[in-house]
Image 1: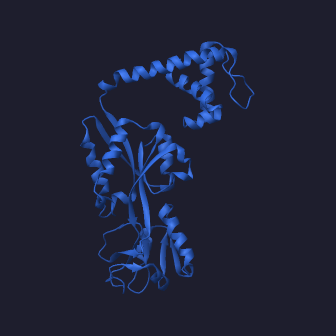
Image 2: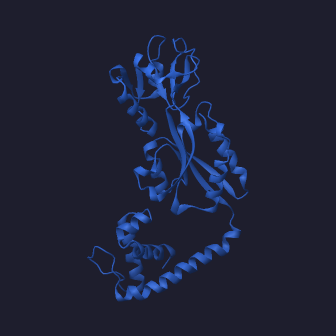
Length: 296
């Protein structure tokens, strides 16, 4: 028998069912069932009563429960005893595209924190689909993500979250547009313009869509597949693209902040179950970075 089998057995007892244990351990229910089956085959006895909505131990399972708890404690002590000799920790961090574009310094600032410990190495993963960012956490592809997706859409109890900054919404116009010389653009002024929208599944897009419903803007909205297409259609006479950052440094475009501020909250999110000393250290150091680092 191994540590995974023992952890799975005890999780079923703790949570009350195979399905609840699968959710807690971020596994499929068939995978949990398979672990229990192999454990029972090794022991030569059934541990659970079958055909029951809740996990009910057999007499053999009740006897084995005490042994399993002792084994779990032994595994925990074994890990603790060798931790001082660890050769280092590798943390995988997921970044949305916006943090690696334009004038944003946040990505580079975080990567420099790889030097905060001789035993800590950071690996970056570019997240192309914001709606699946938290799925990357659940699958173990990343240990921590920067995301504008609120974990409440999943199961908030599974996640730790720390909000770092608010990202200003920008209106991008042609350099010869009548607004190009302004310091900022009032939201109500958007009623005078055609808004060029692009496919975007982030929380920012949802916020802006809500704003559009408050004003009679939909009849003057044009849709594009990508932000590149939308920006290419800007002219001196027509069009404004609302973005959550300065996506391009083109000499033909001007980015102006919207007023009042339409902000998108960006935060660091990680799984509570996978918290580690290295991860907590990194998160604390990220939170100490100057606020202007995070302003896109």
